[in-house]
Image (cartoon, rainbow, N blue to C red; front, side, top):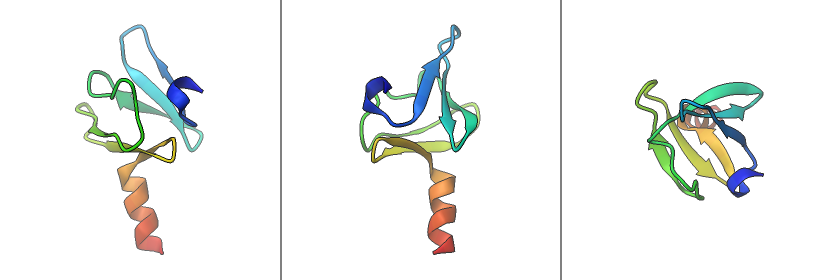
Length: 72
């Protein structure tokens, strides 16, 4: 586990961060990605406008969390 995260993440040679969320490879940003990533961190990816956060050691897309709350 990198950085004590449950989410698999990696950095490319172009210094871009990627992660596998729900079986899908997702771009997590470059300079905006928090280093070291810690519980409670939240960031917006400039290239895509997506917002992510770290909850319970897992990187989550904020839009996914909002959708889950609306379904309850």
